Image (tube, rainbow over all chains, first blue to last red; front, side, top):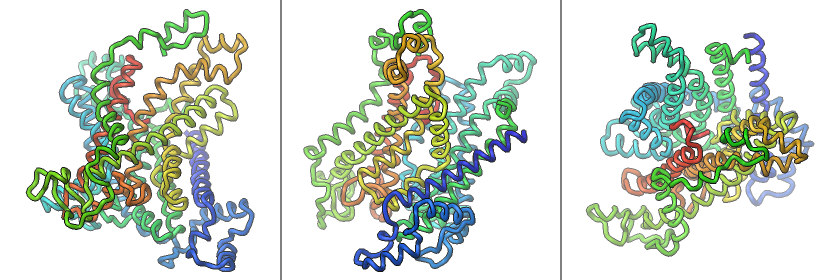
Length: 305
Length: 303
């Protein structure tokens, strides 16, 4: 288990390095940040001065090294707009994003797991058809439009829940549904497939032959073995959830990292965009590490492979 | 990828059996194809079938409801937006923007991804190491965030959108193609081809590619749906197609700001996206079942 853990840690460090490099490349590959930061009528001297101040006149590998070093310390510079360190602004809003993503994940799991299990047990029957129909429609619906429709229906017409902002639990319901819907659809389909694969195997026949009740067979024996791909997906999808939070937060004016990042694009506040993207990506990488370690525990075959 | 054919054939034959083409096309394939084809026709014919210009504003006809509601009229079948532009016409013209971006991005992503995947799976070694690391890094970077950081600096344009969406889709292809190539390279008919002196590129193109073409096709179908949603999402965030160009995503961005006044502007573009993507997804499902009848039904479509 130790070797497996060390391996995964190395892998995570490598991927984190890749993420920082990608962020650096995204910033640099589209030309001179100095000229995009200054107004169009800025003089050549002003441009040179800013380039020097930002270190853009140094060789690219020195810039990259500096960027890596700064990123390691969580230093992405100062927000042009707020005058505070970009990282502080982002970290201030991280709890809101994590709260939303976490509730969405739980909500999706609570809906999708029973749906997938039931569909697998009743394969080919009406339950299966309805559950999978629901899932494919869910996968085909853009989440931002689902959010708009929920606001229209529940907030504007029925006037049941607030349209935006963060506050009590009533503020969390619509954003969490919006964020979790696509994930729920995917999760339901995967749970069904995974269960179908397990349900046909010999050890379940053995369990039944022992005289165990069907409920025990399905929940104790089948589900445990079907869990590995499902948990893997949940981990991978948490990143998509964090990315989706950008959209959901924008629709519901949820004060999280995603909304901050999008707003910062329009105000050309690049340090904040960088810091926001970096923090969300890093959160995602760390969660995947957790998932890797978790299923190494769940399935001994993986950590010895 | 039939195993029976390859084992007996002395010559390396692609596993595509001719009788497969003779099979009847099932309704499950035809039905979802209808909305997809319809959207393509609409995209092509928008200039002739749209009742109004998509950018023509008419201040006297602002916020008209659809024809079946009180206050609606036959000249504005799906109503008008807050500057009096015709919702139906913008919907039809919007197809002309959303679909080409999604299709171009998918073709680019599928080509690059499949090529890298097949090469790395077939040759293995250092190439494979680089490609798998690339895949891991990309998978670790939530796509919307990546798109945001690129578009924030590069600015939105047709080309940038296509490239960004293609970067989002190549990984799925590369991963699956690599896996298939790893398995196929050990097959007898590939080894026979190698023994006969065929070089790497020839084996890749003549022997591997025909066997994985159907998988590429199925993956690409799902990718088109994904790309349509992602393009709409980016446009909704203001990072995709820019107004006044009609696009389903940016129209929804506009509509969301006055949702209390008009439900129709916020409803129809989303409905259009949903129906087309649903068609594409069901088409992908049906295509997979049709091309490979042994595949388990209901495996998740998105890679």
